[in-house]
Image (cartoon, rainbow, N blue to C red; front, side, top):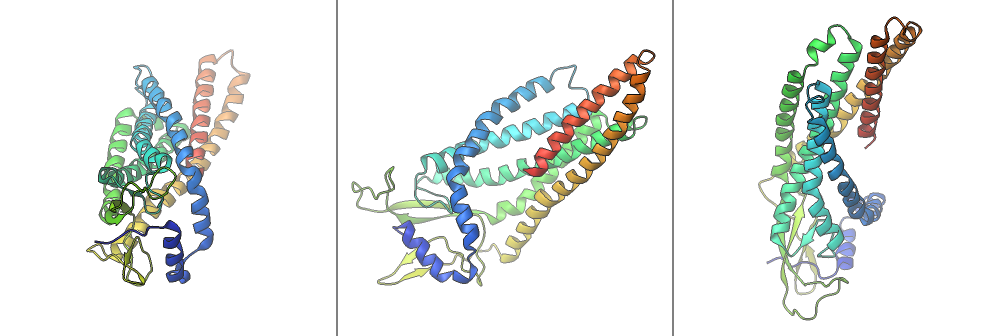
Length: 323
């Protein structure tokens, strides 16, 4: 049985000596500092986001608002965000607030159920996060068609088309998450029990099984380690070898980077620019209508409402792109 290193400091020092050529100390320092605020900050976002998305869902399901394509896509987006926060919040509380074991990377816990839950959450969170991004792209696209083509656009931006597009996008995001499910896995080792101050609990003289989560498969040419094996005098690092190949890991990294990050961000940027351009044209048209508002008051009000909605969606897309 593999034994966990009894001291996190010893583990880091031993790993640094063996991986010196592969370590980016700047990223390690940033990751260490960010991990101190990641849990509380993300949990605070979830605490605010869950009731906010519930409120959005309640409002968007009202009969008078549920008939438009824009509101239907906003409803899907609120549901995706809500599910993401609901499943992620318990992991944040367990691993970052309670913090059952001093080793953070990968995540360590004496509870096997929590590691199984963490495996499920990681892939589901990836799917819901990418779904939210692509729904934002759909939202911007539908809005651009509706605003940019006032006469013919309404025929294409129907609620039915929005539902079909959102459904196909959901199926697509599920398939994109499959390689991530195949790559990620959990392992276990023997280690001491720690109390709340991360000191070895003296009431337990024997080691217990500690479970931890691995987010990638180490390559034979890289020094990526997750535990150590205790020999008589020397600590030897153990590399994990399984059926998951390095090619699958590389494919998953590029797939997630391109499909869930780069592509939607690029499309959101382009569509936002196009939407801003159409909004400027709408403002000019509204100025013309404003001079004739006595003759066409209803048209003026409708144009003002459409421009306001487009402005809200532009700000919404900007937040998604930045995040």
